[in-house]
Length: 235
Image (tube, rainbow, N blue to C red):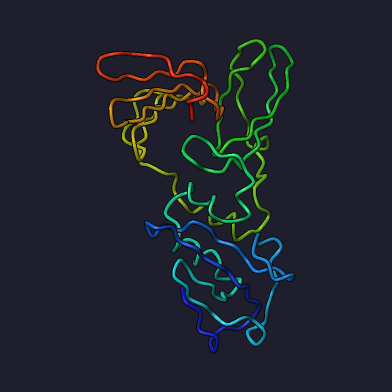
């Protein structure tokens, strides 16, 4: 959305949008009081009369946008939640295997053994395996807390964007999602089998209990040979 300075009223921010060689958004940063570009939480709020002039350059642009229009503008630039990492406020957060920032903290308590722990994930998860006694622990709504950017506009963008890939099928308690280069099979406890299609075969990775680091059960299948993938080569 290009700004029309004459039609803007109310507080506005100045945003720099950069693109990669493929034309996809690579970074979205907001101008702060010291002149640098970074998080929306540190952005300087301008009036239409004091905001910098819009600019267009070979790999991007810098424009003034009304603060109330931030969700609309960002939703017009991004396609799914993995692209939220291009926004400065989301960059510090770890990402799940699909590239989605992990902004939901789950607080768990096992009734069987009393163990308590937290898990920070990219989406709501309602069942976990207790890491101490292996009992199934269910999450209740108040135990899931948003720990992402505090901007209501950015939270609205996160809420309205779809996850990357698309749901292929539900098989019993399992869900199967399409990914850019393969599929992801997910069970209710957050365990995932991720299969990537590569140039000379496929790689298979197991993520346990909603974690973002593969277990030792990662394999590559190529030319009829199944071989473990060294930990240094796992995503």
